Each structure stands twice: as structure tokens, then as C-alpha cells.
Image 1 (cartoon, one colour):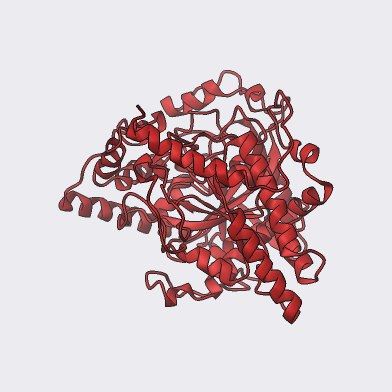
Image 2: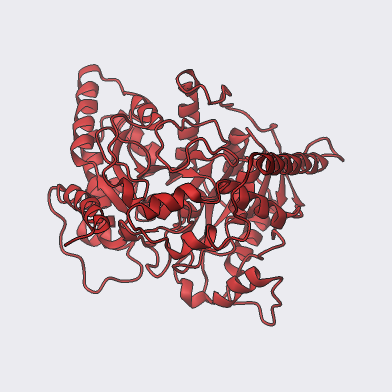
Amino acid sequence: MATVLETLVAKAVAIRDESCAKVDPPLPELPDPLPLNVTGIPALLLTKEECEITETEPIELVEKMAKGELTAVTVVKSYLRRAALAQKVLNCLTELLWDRAVARATLIDEYFQKTGKTLGPFHGLPISSKEHFSVKDRYVNASFVAWAEKKVDKDAHVIEVMESLGAVLFARSTQPQTIMHVETETILYGTSYNPYNRNLSCGGSTGGEGALLGFNATPLGMGTDIGGSARWPAASNGRYGMRPTAGRVPMGGLIGPTPGAESISGAIGPLAQSRRAMEYFMKYVIGSKPWITEPGLLAVPWREQALTPGKLKIGVLWSDGVVNPLPPVKRALQVVVDALKKGVPGWDIEVIPWEPKMHDYAWELTSQLYYTDGGEKVLELLASVGEEPLPLTKWILTENPYVRKQDIHSLWELHSKRDAYRAMYAEYWNESGKDDGHPADIILCPAAPGVACLHGTAKYWAYTSHWNFLDYPGAVFPVTTVDQELDVPEKDYTPMNFQDKFFYDIYSPEKFVDAPVNLQLVARRFNDDVLLQAMKIVENALGRDS
């Protein structure tokens, strides 16, 4: 007889499989054996039109629908089929919303045919979301087996906003157990994979969205980020992802085990095929004034021109002083710095060094503030149905030397230390402008020590979580891919500590064939618009029309 846990897992898997079975026409059989790099599979199994649609830049796709060159139904069905194919090769979906998406796309087409007008800036654009965003009349398990039968009666606020702007929700994607790994593995659905190399992780905790992006199976996804959960997956799959300042994008309707825990604030952010799509998301979601119905949000408008015209100062953090970046990341930093020094027409770009300031201490505080109840709530939820903690759950929770249950006085002390660190860092940032009155606009830094990690090895988040601790917005962008000749390990390297040694010891370029290499940009709190406008200039320096 099946246990409660087995029954709940089987139900969740059946819902996913039944949703994917609605794809019409059915998908052809996969090649056997599958290659490690499956990014070429769609060209073999999808139609030419489906490939062209799903490989078009998102805002360009909206423009095509706005001109009547494509219908919303044609576009959403193309993405539904490609996402179903992604599930077959990458195990990245929790549910495909075929009926809902096709019905909404049909209404959008009917509106356009009747009025000749678009429904909004995202007219007909398919969007996907991490599973723990509430979707009306659907189950939301937030990766906990105990919640496999938890149904909600309303969409998450950000989904409501995006659909009011013309978007079409079409897929929901995987996240890790407890939603607190930067890989993606659960008891419910198993492991999700990287499309460029299935021996590698797709990242986490918004890992399913990362895999969909890397497979061109979504134009724009929505994820959360409390330690890197939007940026890691985007970086692991060579795409764009952002963690905004907390309180800017609506959070209502997110399901998680510790509502009200705000010592480190999470944020919803976009994962996208382009920088422009990320900027559209931020501009129009904020432009909808979501704070009117979600009072915890900040009424801070988006600025069309946030940068000082003609001047850009960039600090470069080559290492955080705890774990040095591995050869592909170090090379990518040099590529971008060299490009910036060559200049961009119309911009005076200054590149300055940016030294780390007690990043190890910041991680110590961060990891304490993640679980101020000592992990009690999460562990109780797992134990309620006999769900065993996975290795990376143990690493961040029960094996983490900093995690303990706080009392009110120790919590106040931690908050005081957090705020003191934030004040110190703000002053440090101000000092970057002491000579010319122009502090750094952004920081260029790694998104992680390396590229997409080998499964089970993502045990250092601080290149992303550091900015969550400061509540600074950060975004990742693609630079290059691992080069088997250029990215060889440094000979006679002396690691700084056990963490540095861990990553150095597992690295060799042949393990990371075809892996994308992304970097990260960071701006000051509330300077989300500065961040994305500066990214445009950085991409221009790399020869891209961003």
C-alpha cells in the first residue's frame, strides 16, 4: 500500500503529465540517446514556424502581433509545444496551462480583430512563472509534498498585473525543495537539467524558468530572489535575470513556508530572453501602480532617464575575497572590462576597482537571518509527511553553523548588525565619488564562482546573496561560453580557504562543455532603472544592440 508521501507525489506528477498530454499535435519521439546539449532538439522536432516564433526577441514578438503579422493563439501554441518538449528533455515543468492559455489568447485575438487595438504593452506575449506563484483554481505546493493538494482561488498579484497588460500565462515551472537551493531538485518532481549540458544544473531556485529560457521555451518568466534565485538560473542558462529592490514588484499571492519573515526581503523579478524584455517588465509593472492595491509596495515611479547623461562609472569586483572566480568567469570579467575601456559613443566610461568589504561576515549574518526560527517551520512541514531533507536542504539549514533559533533580543541584535553593515556599505559606495562628486553608478562582478554547477555542488551563494543582504538590485547578462583551451585551471593555485578549495578542486573545463558564462551588474537601492539602463551601455560596449 502506498504511503501518504507516495500518494501525494504521484498526484503532483500526474497533474503535470496530464497537462503536457494536452499538447496538440502531439510531439514526435525524442532521439535516442539524447545528447548532453539538447538546444538543437527543437529544430528536429518542431515546425519551422514554431522555431522562428519561439526564437524571436520577446518585444519584437509583441510588435509582430500588434501589426497583425502573428496571432496570439499561434504564438502561445508554439510556446506550449516547445515548453512540453523542454519538459521531456529537462524535467522543468510542474504544469502546462494549455486550456487557460489558448482561451486567453483567443480572447486577445478577438479583441484585436474587433478593435484594431492591442490589449497592452505585452499584447499576446506568453509568460511563465515559478510554481509557488498562485494560479487560480490550481494546486500550489511550493515544492513541499505536504502541500501537494493545496489549491488557491486567486492569481498572484503580479500575474493579475501582467495579464492586465496583455500577457498570457502558459506554464508553471519547477523549484527546489524548500525553495532555498540555487539548484532545482525536489522529492515531488526530481531533478531539473541544463539544456546546454544535462550534466549541469539549471540553477535555482527559479530553476525551471532558467531551463525554459535556455531552451527558448519561454520569452519571459517570473521568479523570486532572496539569495540569487532569479539570477542564478538566468546565469546558468545564458540568459537575463533580475532581482529588483524589495517592495517594487507585487508579492501578493506567493506561497511559502514562512510568510511574514522579512529579515532578508525576497523580491519578484523577471527572467528573460533580452535586456529589453526585463526593462519592459519593470517599467510597465511599476507603471501600473501596484501599490494602490498592495500597500506594502513602494510608490517609486520608473525613470526613463535615470543615468547622468554621458557619464558612467563602473566599479569592478574581481573577487569577493572568499571564493575566487573560476577561469571562465575571470576571463569574462576581463572581456567586459576591455570592451568598456574601448568606449561607447556618447559615453564617458570610467572603470574603477571595487574591493570587497567583509563579504564573509555578511554571509554569516545573511544565513542567520534566513532562518530566524532555526528552520523549525520548514522542518516541521517536511516531517509532516515523512519528506526527507535533500542534501542541499541540509547544507543551508541543518548543517549550516550559523542557523539557530533566535529569541526577540538576539533577533534585534542581528537586525542592528545588518543595518550597521548596510550603513557602512553605503558610505563605502559614497567614497567612490569623493574625487569627482560622481559615485559609482554600478558594480560589475561575478554572478557565482563559476558557471552552471555540477549537480549537488552549489554551496556558495554569496556573489548574489550579498546584494540581497544589502537590498541592492542586481541583474545578470550573458558574456561568453566555457572555452576548453582558454579556461584551464590555474597551476599551483593556493586556495584561500576550504570553500575556495572546494570549487577549485571540482573545476576542469571538460566538465562544463558548452556552459554559458554570465556576469552580474549591481546598483544602489531603488536604482533599478539605473541598473538596466547601465546594462544597455555595457551590452553596447560588447557590440550588442540591447
